[in-house]
Length: 516
RNA sequence: GGCGUCAUAGCCAAGUGGUAAGGCAAGGGUCUGCAAAACCCUGAUUCCCUGGUCCGAUUCCGGGUGACGCCUCCA
Image 1 (cartoon, protein in one colour):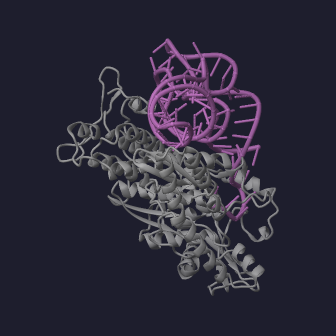
Image 2 (spheres, rainbow, N blue to C red):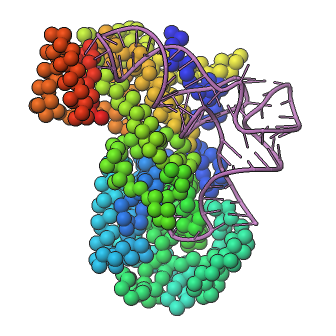
Image 3 (cartoon, rainbow, N blue to C red):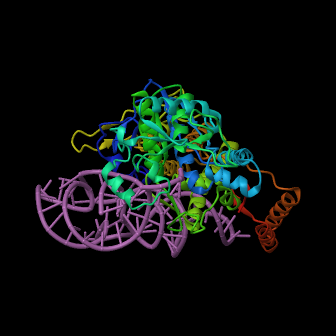
């Protein structure tokens, strides 16, 4: 066949097979890419640190949500039973401050923004977690953990504040790969209030006493609330029903101190490893700057949603590797919109071919193009390499793209390459599926595009909403004018509709329209 | 100061010890009444600079320059 699309694969797919064809992740703990081996065959226990709910989530919060949702979807696709837990931190200084500002309870604030966050997640096509625990619902377990650490000598109480004794944990720093002495010398320059009551500047708070007007719980150390680092220790293992979990994920800023402190608490308490794989996404910048309150450049998901379908945001987030800093900009979003549109246009065209197909069954030639047998079942793919050149011998049919997609995703979730595989498939569809194709062929190609897109959480088969009658009438009127060769009238109507944000396209299958 | 990351066409962005995926944008063409969409064609003699290893480096090692992250609440 020798078509162009078959020669347009990245170099990696044209060389020898890798040693490892299995799913691999970069593990912050070991600073290397490792094959993923779950504790229990076929099951994944995964925890992702969720947002503190004191405001609408911003696009930085959205990155781990989208990235790890994609990881989850891919593992589900691979056949894993994924138990996915992600918390909402619903007690925190920021929430309390916000509540005081508005003169309402902290609970009211957190409930409100949990609902808003869930709405944003749904709009980004992020699947609801298996469980979304709340910190405030787990206080007794947190107290139990802190008590256990105190009993074992890893925690100490100073006037109602309980600290973790980092000096006693020989492994402290193993995740962030920090040298404790360096950390301590760094801390000497910082003037942290209340520092003097700590045994060591690196000790962190497990329980803090209440201040007037704050929510509180009773504890062996008096009224107060738990420190931030304790909640995830409890919620992850409780809802994943295991002392040790497979994957713990979150933004890279959480590596230190949050995740380091989680490891310290859990492993000092249980004596067992907390999580086997630690995954961290890089930050999202905006216009080449870090998002920060001082710069005032926070952009909420809700804001982006006003201007773009949030599927565009999702496509954009997945267009770079999750461990690379990504820059959010108007230009990038416009490019992402056009790119996603290319996939959607291809699917629409396939829908037309499906609707107007002249024949039903696959021809022999079509079966060859799909790589399926007489019954339409995919022929098992065996990729081998040429003994002389070492180059891979790749299938010359549609199976190529799914293979490419899986290779990319197996390789530490290379979603950029996975998207490229979908584009190669789109090209295949645009070239191979014509008005002479059988319905079965067009359907098979469409199914392939939709399935791969769905693994990335991308919705590409967009149902056309109906136009109002008046506009339908205009389109009919224009068709009549075109037939009568009154092109001036036809173009006038087209311009009129364009002004209303409706673009007309004349195809062999009739007039198609799109909203801008 | 400590630890770590990155530097690829106009833009975004993969990637590999053997000579550069994909998308957006741009130009030309086919199709179309004209458009739009789609398809085809064109584009980095080259992967920040500089030494080194190698038959061969963008890819490995050293040095340099530049950008950035964490070390403090933060996804």
